[in-house]
Length: 416
Image (cartoon, rainbow, N blue to C red; front, side, top):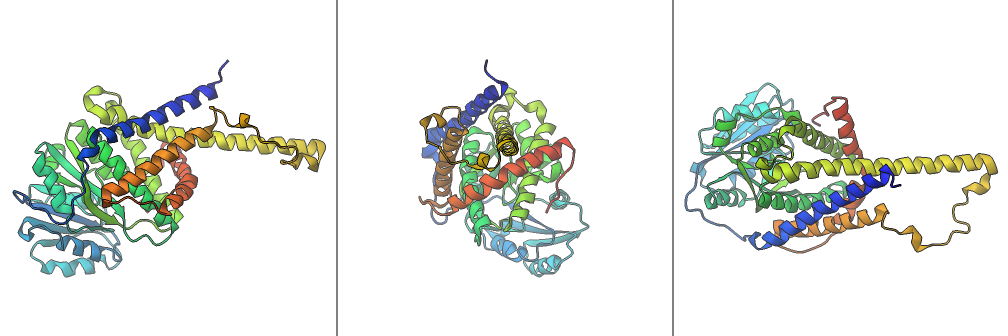
């Protein structure tokens, strides 16, 4: 009789491969639509845009963030910049004040209430047709905004456009690992864009039609993932979200394992709990691929990794417990793991997790390479891929399982 464990394993294997094949087919069907433009472009019209920069203790990065906005290739009389200090305790406000000499820059200061409250303060003063946010740890490419706006120009039904977010100036192995991860994100976001199934509008320079907030209301706290919740809300109300692969934003990423763990724990916790909040859209055809693919695929990934690693540690524990029992029974000879061992192809069989990992790794490698091509217009492979598998392969399962645990005990993770 087939065991429950075997049934679960085969189910996870099938669903994991299905998700990967779905992305691959989507890529093959839409590959000719993926372009990487070089140099500047022009628009038939230049709509007015407001970009908000919410800040909390960002004295080390916010200067470069604002300078990048001032250097955007976009008419200055059509661009407003709102700098919002959310109760910083460092020199952030002092830095922001220096930019008020520019006619298109306004600075606001408020008590600390969280990023969503800072953004909502900005929204209450927006008078332009389009509005977006640039996180204070990110730098916008000079051509990013105009390329994003060209997506709106091509399709009036688009209500928000997300850029390609890549790592700014990686300095160590942890940031190198994130470099490949962000390229993977570019690939996946573009595929989800083709599917009409994007589930997060990232803080680094996603631009919205202001109509979105007029119709659907302001940002919400949303488990400290307000940029995810607004995307869920848009999808539920059938508001189209697109991705512009050659609009680049460079973000500063965590440089230590502990900071990376905290950030990703918050992201995964936000995904799980926003999905719970919007559980009434799951598997409902009228909400399209967002409900039928994106959310289920995310949940499958979390459950699959949690199950496989839980099973691995369970088996490892059983192995050491058995060896300990043998040691007590027959002494030190029981610890000789290599004597009389002979390799046999029997040990490589279709039930092995080994094959699942190989399929997943090949897909990830291909996706990272294609993501880099989409973002930079070139093909290349670097050591960052090795760093990615080394760091994320070991650490990611723990923040996934921790996010599940935190959800079960209703314990929200810290922001930083």
